[in-house]
Amino acid sequence: MVQNQAKYEKVINYIKENILKGDWPIGSKIPSQRKLAELFGVNRSTIVTALEELKADGLLEGVMGKGTIVVNNTWTLLATSPPPDWNETASSNLTKATQLGSVEGSEEHQDHFIQLSKGELAQDIFPTDHMQQVMMRLAGSLEPFGYEEPKGFLPLREAISEYMNRQGTEVSPSSILIVSGALQGLQLISAGLLYRGSTILLEKPSYLYSLQVFQSAGMKLLGLPMDDQGMNAAAIKKHYENEQSILYTIPCFHNPTGILMTEERRRELLNVCEQLRLPIIEDDIYRELWIDGPPPPSLKSLDQHGHVLYLGSLSKTLSPGLRIGWIAGPEQVIDRLADIKRQTDYGSSSLSQRVAAEWISSGLYENHLSFVREQLEKRRTKAMQILDDYMKDLAEWNVPAGGFLIWLKLKVKIPYKELYSKAYQQGILLNPGSIYTEESVPAIRLSYGYASMEDFEKGIKQLREIILKNR
Image (cartoon, rainbow, N blue to C red; front, side, top):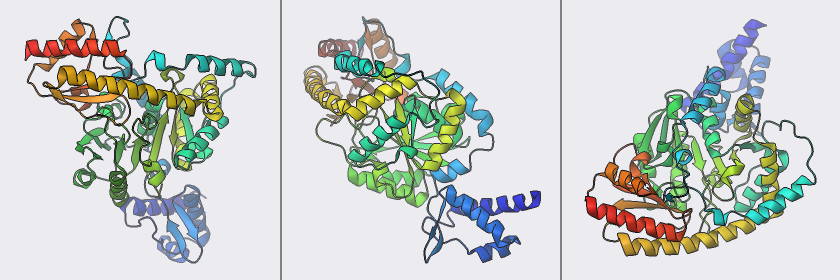
């Protein structure tokens, strides 16, 4: 029995290795059962058992008249071949990453500070009345909570599935995992699917540089250049290192630059990643904050082979305090991540999940988004006017098509540490560009989503005075 088990595992590992190396690309036919049986010196029943497991894992598929075909070679392969020590290290990596936190989570909360750095919506955009209505509606039907199933509250996953389908991204409830915000999604992926020493290709600058999620798991960040259409897809081939690489991107209203990736660039990027068998994490948490018009189709909706893991969240659009996000991807991958999540926190808040399900399924969420877009458009118009009045001679910037972030590139030489220190002393919180690049850059990430426009103008005016005094 042990000998048969060893032979059966050898067949599986042999097939996975050929897929991983690219010798058997997606769409290719693997050797016949007879040839595999001869190669390994086993009877065909052992081969059939191995192939059935690989089909159940989503790597292979039987096609009438063609034989057995390779149908996936990225995330599904990683999920079925996790790091050998992932059970031991996943929990410690998640704990370490959570302790290190992020710039967003470490901002000051004093009321007297002007928050030009805060990456969330203002309190006057928060839907207090509707949230009270939702909570009261739920209060009448609440029952004692137990642990949710590993993937999350089913009605919420069904609501998200329907919502994403309306956006053009078809995904089933079984292919969705509810997480406690997109940050936990990144933590789960890094802890349970990626090998130590993996390379993360990403835009430079990028929000990911301000986190310690991947670095705490022993991975390397490799920045790629951007232009006004998004990440430079040609640079992916140039900098791609090995099969232990993945790509992370924020295609909609990128953090920190605010750039919206064009549809042409999305298709180009996806094509390059398919050629390289490079898995993609699409961080799409800003998608619904469009102002000028809906963004292009998501990478996930254009993906035909399971190359994309999709991150969504309610934190930037509804409430960061709900701590509700989700990962959408191949079901086998979601199953793996759900197992890791179960071992670390037994599931996201049951109450938050029910609140989120009510918001999305009732239509309240989409109505709220219309209000958010109206408010962001007003804020953007005023912010652009203020920057024109006070910063035109000192800096340059692009007008974002959505979101609430502006990448302010200074045109003057100035001691930047002194700039941020003096701004802080005057009660202004800024996020320096260096935290998004790991090097000194003459840029500031501004947010017009949180501070009142009166405070925004006051802060920009004071920032101008500081620059003029210290250049």
